[in-house]
Image 1: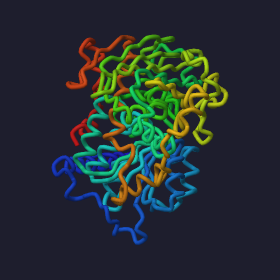
Image 2: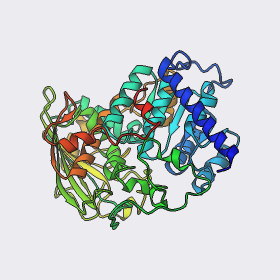
Image 3: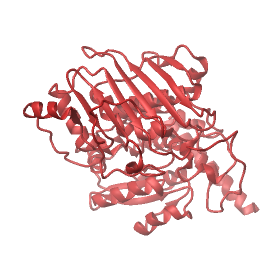
Image 4: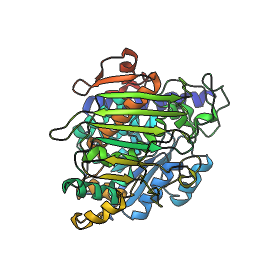
Length: 474
């Protein structure tokens, strides 16, 4: 690196450190309080900054663009020269561009109302925490954070800084959400004791065999690898960690469960008030690895009784051959035609598309993922109860519009961090069970795993790298 480049790098690091010290000292709320009246925008639109602008983040940006309710005031990605960012750059050619979210907030904080975070799972946390500490509203892709502790801190920050937050499980603003709520309120869905949830599509790590981390490769000139790593421990660059392949690795992703659980059993978790489980058991693991997710797993989540509601066991099945036991009268799968395909393969090509079966008092329900609605089993029973089914209201806004209206104080986000947090923490416990291949006993009151010291340590996730610890103190 040339001397002038070194000076620029050191100066940028010093600016970021002094900026973050100011945030920690003041809480930043006095400087950047949430603006529910958008006087800074002449069109009364939400001034949106986007961090992670390719792949899934790019899809979020297209969805926000379609609302007509935003001004894109900044675009940030660790690799602005990558092919997957070009579509977004062409769609929004005039917004200021950054490779480091810290520099973006440093230079443009006063111009930003809200932030869309479409980065890999492990890097959601520092971006969201800094944004919230500055009073910015946050739309964050699922899962919220990479570890149980990160999610806990994000829930606390949402409340502390009084911002609007939305996790990106879009089905929480569509038909499945409103049907599940209406049917639960009317007592159609009641006294549920068992849920079977499954995702048997091909995943990126299926067929992979690794004995360690990937070998070092030259870092692409356009990529800021240090910022890409964020709070993660140092890793040598390898292309096998980026562009969706990060999901295969425990260090960076949350596997099939973290990816699809938020789309499959999210409404059951909320409206059955499941909260946190008291037991999570790795019933079956195939192809165990300390580095990548197993080739197949069956996990049993056991939730205690809640008031008058009985205990619930939620069984999760992933892996192409690890098909769940289903009722004989299950019939054809429920598939939402609007959902995106898995990162490898397609939903329609699987032996059983992603879905769920819910066993309640007197009735059994089958469902898919995302916005797909429940159906009653058997079909004869569905006809018999048809006249007793309550009307299901239509959604007043899709997931993106719901967030933008919440930024303006007009609606409440449906998948805010207080709602999505316990769901993500439940999935984080499942991932810990995959990592240690054991039955875990969990105390929801103390939020500790009481029977497995190593697993309990994993609740915190890996220690952050030097100069990234401050995001845990915002």
